Image 1 (spheres, rainbow, N blue to C red):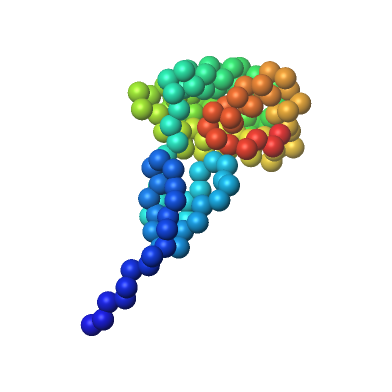
Image 2: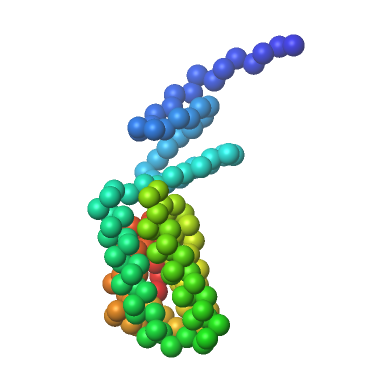
Length: 138
C-alpha cells in the first residue's frame, strides 16, 4: 500500500481555528464552518445574558398587541415561555432560545402581522436578535 504525501498547504487562522489541507479563510462576519461533524457554540457574557432575559420578558409583555388568531397566539405564547425558561437556566442553550424566537417571528409573519409595527415589540425583538446572533427582518 502506498501513502500519499501530506499537503504543504499553509493554514492561517485566528484563535480556536483548526484546519487542514487547502483551507483559505477570507473576510467573514460571524461564524462559518464547512465540513462534517461540526458544532458551533456561541457564548455570551453574564451581562448579555441578563439583557437577553430582560428583553425576552419585555417582548412577552407586548405579544397581546399583535391580536393574533387563538392558535397562533398559543404557539407564540408557548415559544416565548420556553425561551424564557431556557434563558433562566444555569447553563442556557442559545440555540434553543434562537429556535424558539425564530418560531415566534415565523408564526407572526405567517399570521400576516409584523413585529416592527408594534413599538413595544420592536425594540426588545431587535435586542434579542442581536444577542442570539440572528438576522431580524421584521
